Image (cartoon, rainbow, N blue to C red; front, side, top):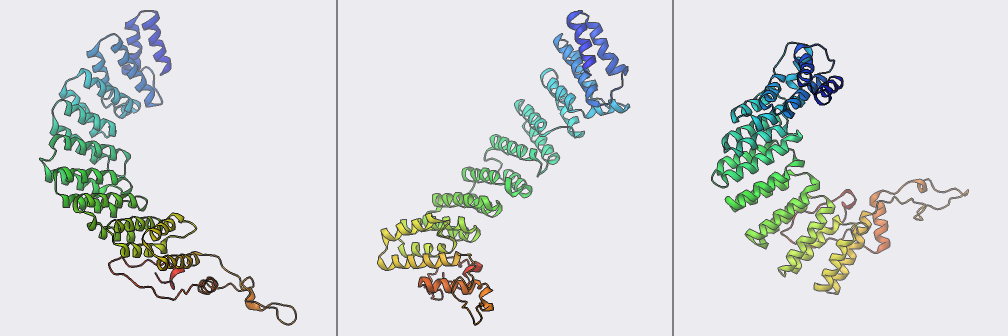
Length: 407
């Protein structure tokens, strides 16, 4: 293709022979004087011919050549031109700028029928119709796009976002059932890792035009749908919206659900936020109970900020007894999180027997329970001591290492 394009440019630029330049492309593109192995080589010749006519300001001829280039043909190489993305991009641009609204719509429809259109073409088609006040036709274009590019295709996210925003800009709150149906359709098939932005858009729509209850329901649904790494942020948003509309006390149930649903590290952070909320309401006992519960998920060696939070809480609101209780719980939790297997000989359990050899049990490893009891005795902690429970909080989480440790 480079050879023919260069030959045509010589006739056009150096020899000033436009007819000869056109004849070069006509022989290659229409007469089939040379058979290309690759479809894209022939497509480049068609595109170069169109650009030649555009340089000469022969707009109608350029548009005609572009239209003919994507007409299905019977030859093997020419047959592939009807699905050449290079030629379709060129044709659609020319139809928008040189053609009529009807011819541009026909070209876009053909590209969608042949399934050569990309997600960008779908959005360009819809924008083209919207600019000319064909709003419902543009929504039909979006519908064809979401059918053609369904999740988990990358283009589906862009099409749905543009579609929903265009629909909201057009109708705002005047088409509530239809708008909700669109959001529900989108979220029904949307992968969890991509759903958060659609939930936020849906929630904002309900806040502005719908009902507060529905908006909070959307945020609650988001918390249960998004992947685990996004749940903490989702619950923070849900709690903030609940505080805004229903008040602080309405968030207690949400905090409990969040702590149950989150991983240990995130749940410990949520316990800190829960405790701060209770402290702001002067519910000191409830705040302390939350911190006590959350301690089982906060390893003092890996989550020092949690224990710093509890330390500052006791300094501000506790007494000597509660402070000592916090230290006792901290030692117990640190012992429970210890994953080191203590060898009996290292702990002094094995003694030399007659003949200078050690007892066979000295080579055995202590079980987790035995090691926990040994560490607790050394630290002066009673791991079986029951702790008072305060009602109104979620059921305690227990890991395998903490099966025998009170909350």
